[in-house]
Amino acid sequence: MTGFETLAIHAGQEPDPTTGAVVVPIYQTSTYVQEEVGRHKGYEYSRSGNPTRTALETCLAALEGGATGLAFASGLAAEDTLIRTVLKPGDHVIVPNDAYGGTYRLFAKVASRWGIEHTPVPLADLDAVAKAMTPSTRMIWCETPTNPLLGIADIAGLAEIAKGATLVVDNTFASPYLQQPLALGADVVVHSTTKYLGGHSDVVGGALVTADTALGEELAFHQNAMGSVPGAFDSWLVLRGVKTLGVRMDRHCENAAQVVELLTRHAAVSEVLYPGLPEHAGHDIATKQMKAYGGMVSFRLAGGEEKALEVCKRTEVFTLGESLGGVESLIEHPGRMTHASVAGSQLEVPSDLVRLSVGIETADDLLADLERALS
Ligand SMILES: *Cc1c(COP(=O)(O)O)cnc(C)c1O
Image 1 (cartoon, rainbow, N blue to C red):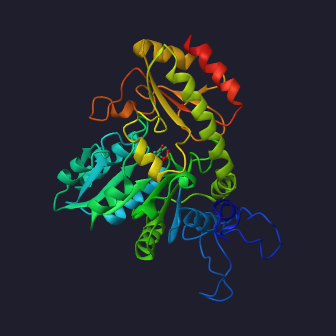
Image 2 (image 1 turned 90 degrees about the vertical axis):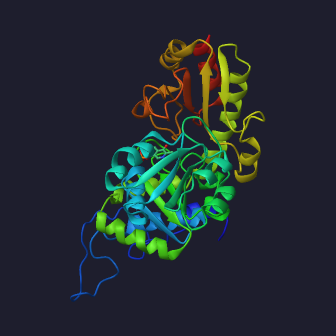
Image 3 (image 1 turned 60 degrees about the horizontal axis):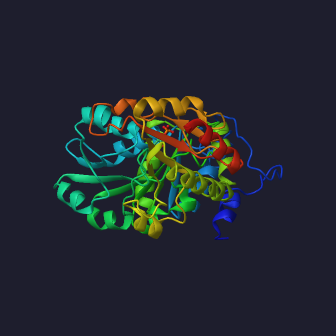
C-alpha cells in the first residue's frame, strides 16, 4: 500500500474493530473507561488522544511521507505549537517576505513578545537567505507557492542552507499530492487543513508532519500540554476530505490552467501570477519540485485598485470570500481582505491584485464568469 490515493483512503483507517464500520467513526467522547487504574485501550482523555484524530494524524503522516502527524484546531494553532516547541527567547527565524499574513502576524505580534526575532527575506533568492542567517538562526520558515503572490522557493536549496536550523515548509497551497517537502529535505510540514486537505470549506483545522520521530514526540508533548487540538467531528471532516484530495487537485489544476490562459490574453489584466507560466521566475523550480502548478491564481488589473474591487464584486460563480482550497471557486482582494493585517509592513501586497481559488466546477462556467466580470 504505497500509492498516494490508496494511502489517502486507507492509511490509519481500519474498519472499526467493534462494529465493522468501514468509515472511521466520530468518537465524540471526552473520556475512556479504565478497567483498573492505568489499564485502558490506549486512550484516557481526548485532549491527549482521540481515535478519530489518530486516524487523521496517521493518514496525514503517510501522505507527507513523515514519521509523525499531529492535528490541531487551526493552521495557526499548529504554527504556534511548532514555534513554541522549537524556539526559545533569543532565537532568530527567517520568514518569507511574502508569508501568509497570519503567519507573519504570529511572528511580528506574538512570538516577538517572547523574545523570538525574525527577518523577512525573499526566499526565492537563496543568496539573500544565506546572508540573512545569523549564529542564532534556529528556523527557516518557507512557504511555496506563497500566498497571495505565488512565489516559488527551492526547498532542497533551503535545506542545504538550513543545516542545523529547522526547515519548516507550509505546504498548504500545494498539498502533499503536488509537493512532498520532507523528501526534499524539510524537517516539518505545516498545513492549514482548512484549505485543500479539508477541501469543502466546512471546517477549520491544522496539522504538523515531521520527518523524524524525536521532533514528532516533542511536538506531541506540546500538543497535549498546550491543548489546541481539533474535536472529533472536525478531525472526521478533514479525514473525509483527504480521501478525494488527488482527484480534486487534478481538477483544480486543470481548471486553473484554463483560467490562466484566459487571463493572460485579456486586455484588462496587466500581469498573471502563476508558477505554471514559463515566464514566472520560479517556473523551473516549480516544475522540478511540484507534480503540477496548483489551483491558486493571482492577477493584477490594468485599471488599478478600483477595477480590482469591481471585478471581485461582479463575479457570480466565483464567490467573494476569504479562504481557499474548497471545491467552490472563490475570489478575493488580498489588500483589503486576507492581507489587510500586513498593510504598511514589508509584506504589503499591491492594491490592484486579485486572488482566485479555482474550484472544480465546469471550466466553461468559470471562464464565462471571469470574462463577464472583466469586460
Ligand atoms: C489559511 C492559511 C494558514 C492559516 O491556517 P488557519 O487554518 O486559517 O489557521 C496558514 N498558511 C497558509 C498558507 C494559509 O493559507
